[in-house]
Length: 143
Image (cartoon, rainbow, N blue to C red; front, side, top):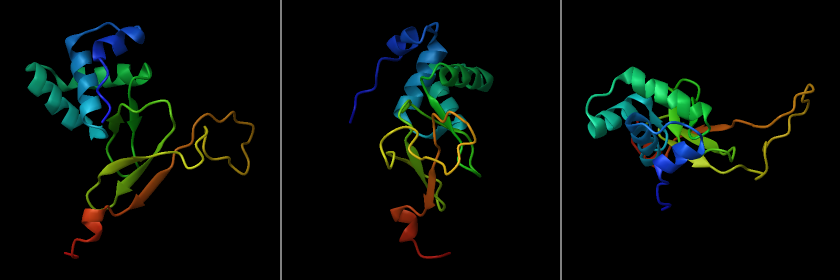
């Protein structure tokens, strides 16, 4: 497993002020890949004590805008956040339990997919979501 990068250094390298909420949120995203906002709020609250949901939302937005975290939102799902940024990977989503897993780009080069007609766009990212049942859900008897 890759060690968690130093949140303080990451914030400084992105020219963001280092604050306790930013450090805590960034660490929570690294520790909980694909976590939703509520899960991250609970983790940060457990770490810092008093922190508002709005503060966590604001920090997530700032970290996303700075490119330190990525916001994903598979159709029909709440927004989730991950620390794996900049490589245009994709996701597997379980229709049963909602678990999300990273999948490397099928081709390996950005933007991974070349559309039949780019309509003049300069494409820099492709988003692919693979849907199915995870191993635990696929072996579970129907209810």
